[in-house]
Amino acid sequence: MTKTFYRYLPVADRDRDWGLFVTTIGESRINPGTPYPPATHPGTHHFQPRQGRVLDEYQIIYISAGTGWFQSELTRRVKIVAGMVILLFPEVRHAYAPTTSVGWNEHWIGFNGETARRLMAKGFFTPGRPILPAGEEQRLLGLFDDALATTRRNPPALQQLLAGSVFNLLAMLYSGEKSGFVGESPGLGAIQEAANLMRQHPEMDVSIPQLAEKFKVGYRWFRRAFTHHTGLSPHQYLLDVRLARARELLAQTTLTTKEVAAQAGFKDEHYFSRLFHAKVGAAPGEWRERARRGLRA
Image 1 (cartoon, one colour):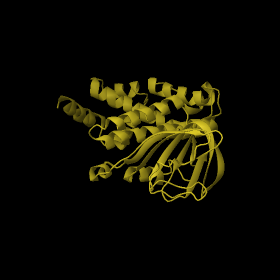
Image 2 (cartoon, one colour; image 1 turned 90 degrees about the horizontal axis):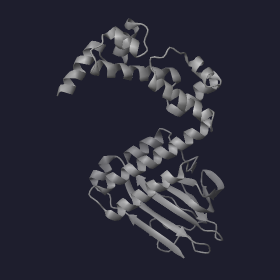
Image 3 (cartoon, rainbow, N blue to C red; image 1 turned 45 degrees about the vertical axis):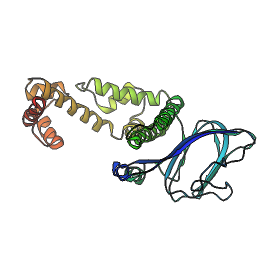
């Protein structure tokens, strides 16, 4: 017996212009002994597991229960268990199925568009690594449930709402992959605590090696893991936090440039002014006037 809900969605020009559009969304509970794929699959997406298929879209497939297998022309056959996500890529032949004696629960969303292709081209996800951990499964399942509920309601701008769901799903998967790089506490905890400390106290007088020592991790590991986790080196992250604090003080207070520099963590007013101009494109005083005109407007 199979319990299935799915929709295949029309795509308008405005949906393509949005940059990301959804082609299909659904969920199935495949019970033990049930043929797979279900006979209700449309011809454009139907396949025989032995031959596989090639799609012209991306798909996120989350397996919330059961076991099975997956393989593609780029990867060997691997076992799939509950808590795994399969990411399918266009023009890559693949095949997958639940274990006949066990079955599985699958939740999927298909998508495409210029923004999706750009994310993949930048290497955020690659067809050579199509199997990802679900990470926080309750949140992931909640995102699928919300997207399915939205699809059932069929509100105006459904495609744009579902595009937001896809972005959230991809962000969760990417975050989970990055978290897996640094591992569990104390590794991941050290990175998170260090970033929180920088955001809360940008004025602190501390070097990056001292931060690593504070959180009892090696400097080289800390720098590499922090960069992998945030996309910025610890030094650049702290500079960006300090500049953000400086912009906030310039816009919301009457402090002098020297006082702003000190409270944002810069010891040298002249270095601060040069760096601010280089990064923001205007001197602190000029930026303050622009910001205040914008606030008054």
